[in-house]
Each structure stands twice: as structure tokens, then as C-alpha cells.
Image (cartoon, rainbow, N blue to C red):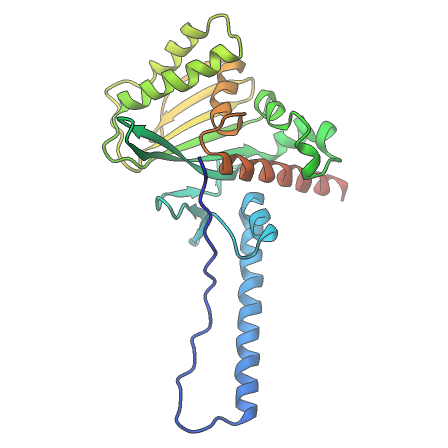
Length: 287
């Protein structure tokens, strides 16, 4: 499912009021100089802000200055990224060190007639873990060369701290729907990856989503892969369970960056951001 892209709307200096009398040429030149300086200053400030955010946003701006899938929200203490399609906001960094790689949408047909946006998701990864796990194999490759490699597979199977944050968009959603949706999508992946106890593992995971948990629009579900392939699940900041299983961790990530992801454009954004993050960390090491 495609992730829509939207142009950045850069603020422009206000247009001077029109006068009935002609303006001297030096005044026009001065006005143009001030406008140019303001524009340059804004672009510089924007790029400085991008450096404070994530390689995902930085690479998007650099690859196409007129295109970006997200808008920035800034306050005095933290940066966040707003998905313009849903209005939902994602922190650029969570758990102190996990950086936002990309945002996508999970859509699902209702009664086979209408596609609704169930939730927006953001994928995060720890940059130090990426460098430690992937630098030897991928450190000298280009983005185009990654197409021929098992990059996403190595990311999913590596001992890398990652989080998929789900933010509910559909206001009529119930936790039972979440549980049933995971039974279908993750169950298929567990069978695909050949887990001998896939049914038991699936029940253990989905049983964490009890009916007592209330979800509504804006509710947050974090699926975090920690060191040792431990999947920790949180609903609105409350931990509801943890399971040690490399196959389960891979099945979760496969929904978003695997061969058949929920949002293909988001997967490409995440791929680029993963590679950009890895390259930046290797450059730091080389200095």
C-alpha cells in the first residue's frame, strides 16, 4: 500500500504592500537581498534541525528538496514528526537512542468494501546496534547495491534494538480487532519462518492483548525488540508482556520491512534511512 508523499511547505517572507508610486531601484534591490538572506537562513536552520532529527528525514530532504512524506513539529525540549495523512505525531527519538526511520499506514478493508486506516506506524532502530551488526557486511556498499543483498533480512535477524510504534487512527477500533488482526498477519509469518511451536507462540503473543485494555484513536502500542531477541509489548505506556523469541521478533518486523509489507513506500523510506544511519555511524568511527 503506497505511502503518500507531500511537498514541504517552506515559509516565505511576507510580500510587501503594493504602493501606487514607483519604488526606487535601490529599494527593490535591498528588499530582494533581505528576502534572499531570510530564505537562505531558513534553509540553513531547517537543515540544522534535520541534523538533530533522523537520517530518514535528512535523506528525504537531500534526495528531493521539494518532496517529503512528513512535516516537522518542534518544541523547546524535543522534536517530533507529524504524519500529514492522519495528523498523528511520532517522536524522532525514543528510548534515548532509537531513531525514527520511517512512517507508514496500515490499511484494511471493512466488509470487503472500504479501506480504512487502522493505524499509522513508525519504525525505530538503535544506530550503535546497526553499526555493530551490519558494518562489516554492508559498510562499503552503495544504496543500489543493497538491492542485491539480504539487507532487510539481516536487520530483522540481527541482535538490534528496534521498535515498531503503532498509533491507532480508527476511532471505532477495539482491542479484540487488534488481537484478531495479529493472529492473522503474524500467524502467517510464523508459519513462513518455520517455527515448530508457532501456534503456541502466537497464542502467547496475542493473549497479551486482553479485553480489559481500552484502545481508541491516539492510543499507542509499542512492539520493542530488545537485546537477546526479547519482544516487549506496551499499550499506552504500560508493559503487558515480554517474550524471548527470535522468530517472533522477525515475524513482527516482517510486517513492515519484509517482502510483503503493509506499506511498500514506507519500507523503501526505512531501507534508505537504515543505510544512511549506518553510513553516518561509520563516518563517525573513521574520524
